[in-house]
Length: 165
Image (cartoon, rainbow, N blue to C red; front, side, top):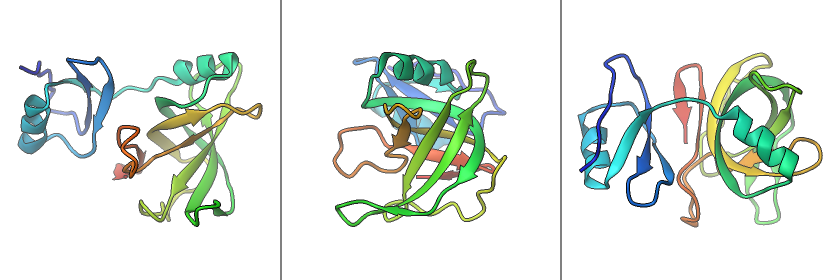
């Protein structure tokens, strides 16, 4: 049975599998349907929080392909990019909140799978869940959407109280 610890003011939540201890994001607002979904799939509901130090540690150790949840501010909007498979990505740089030394990470948000964040501007706060990949410039986060390969839990980006996934 899932352990439920929800506050009435929470507007979103993550869950951790009781069986595998792997995080899973329930991609929508807390409501009775999501509580039932979490219970059916044996997830423990937890409040949303950022784990920026995890990315700093991954960067320092040059580790890739790990799912992360981070918070930060947009520092730069970049041109959309295309990959070799024909997908288009909205790309931007975020500075992770509270990390010293400062760490900037690129975000590659697939806008063929998820909606483009049209209102995104420099200095905007974002929270996101996706897959971190190391590179010497700070790394990048991708799979901020439903994962069609089912290798990862579904990712998302929150901006101005809206979740894109």
